[in-house]
Image 1: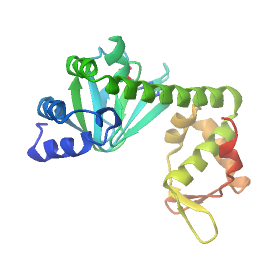
Image 2 (image 1 turned 180 degrees about the vertical axis):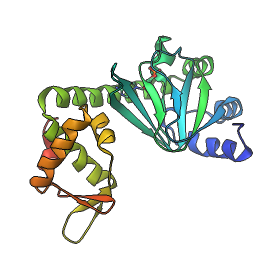
Image 3 (image 1 turned 60 degrees about the vertical axis):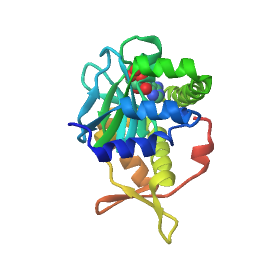
Image 4 (image 1 turned 30 degrees about the horizontal axis):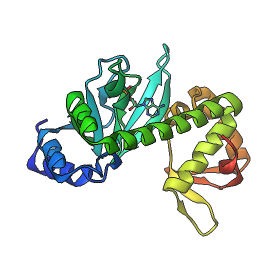
Length: 234
Ligand code: CMP
């Protein structure tokens, strides 16, 4: 789909909020806005596949995109979720190697796409961009370490409980009984987030329901928060 005038306005507005670009001078910023491409993706559409050749950096203007890897049976593990103002594709952009994950739109999304050559030029012109990028990469490694720790040291029940508590605090609305209401998720969606099969998640949900951590109500989940679970190491 071709970029509309509104897309360009959206790009201009959002790019200023992307940490990597906050230090950019007015002149370079305007250059970028002129050369950037805008792409629209429908929910569940693939942006690119793991092992594709890397060319561009993608910045999320609106919507939500997830980075996942798959095993031979097609089971998915979600590595990260990118929302408005965040970027992805930086790994291939930096080392020129193939894409390390498959990127799929979680919602209808508008992305702006910056060519590798342009981004490398920017880094040469403004070292603060490189520093900002390194800070974000360090943060992504920390998050990946926590995920490795969870996969290695927590069982599926604990990983699922942690995921639900995290979502409750991030997106949930607390009712008068102190329970957090979040949207009901499909078992396959939860399985992809905690690195387990759908059947194992189904069993784990029964355990959490029995422990009264989770209650299912028409179209949503009610979560009873145990904050100590979130402060534990993984
Ligand atoms: P790239 O390898 O070019 O394409 C896939 C992208 O997914 C990658 O760049 C990162 O932007 C993102 N990605 C891959 N693995 C992770 C991870 N563990 N944490 C956060 N983002 C990741």
